[in-house]
Length: 194
Image (cartoon, rainbow, N blue to C red):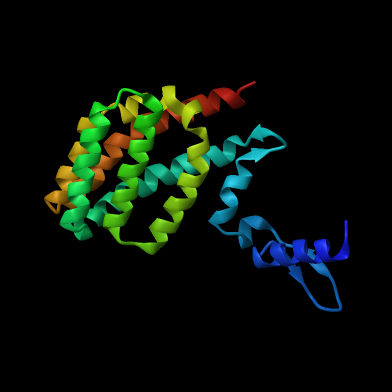
């Protein structure tokens, strides 16, 4: 490997906060748990070619925690155009028979919820979670069918947001997300059981 290639690699690792370079001294590898950002999450999903169950669990926990909060914020802030788009997305979801396409529509739904929440921090988190989740859509089709196959649950979130009722929006999001999250958590536990 050439010196310029090594320098470029170290520069990129430094920009990502994963190494610290002290001119004339040393290069120190930093603990990614303390110094990296969410952009590292997709790369952590597989470790030595194997699914890292702890990373998946963490993603599921984040999804279950953030979904209701984002729906709550959307009930406070979502403009009528976003609410209308949410309604159309739920209509399309209700008519879609393909489980993978249903998941894509669910992602579009949550994308709109995040737009309605008008929070850059939640937007950046959601972008990373989506980027991590999308490649697994076909593999998750069966597990997620119970969630994405419930358009009435999505509609309850839209109705609460449209009514400007943050508590109802949060509860409706929790009711939607919790069953699939629990099923996926149980499946993960079964994977790690000897």
